[in-house]
Length: 125
Image (cartoon, rainbow, N blue to C red; front, side, top):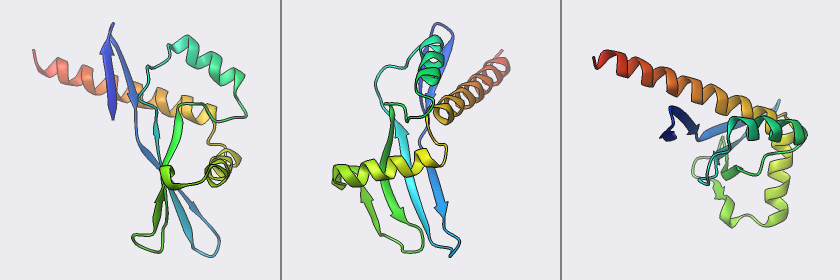
């Protein structure tokens, strides 16, 4: 998890994996992360969620995709053509992994990181 510390704020940009399983048991794993650009303020995040409720936010990316049942069978996002990458993102969006999911994940991670920091600091006294 990458964190930014300042002004008593903790902002996390976790890496995460989404596993989609078909009824046949076959699966695809999407390894995702957030952009390393500057984090928006809480107000900007809330506004972005309202504006882009049906789309993926711009700082949410798929780093790679792999087939779950076949070890070492994966493709990095930099090797995907634009159409395949757009289809991957649309597949995630169809499963409600859009701006609202991103906002909730970041809020959860920020709160967890803050809680761990407070716990750590309270034991340093």
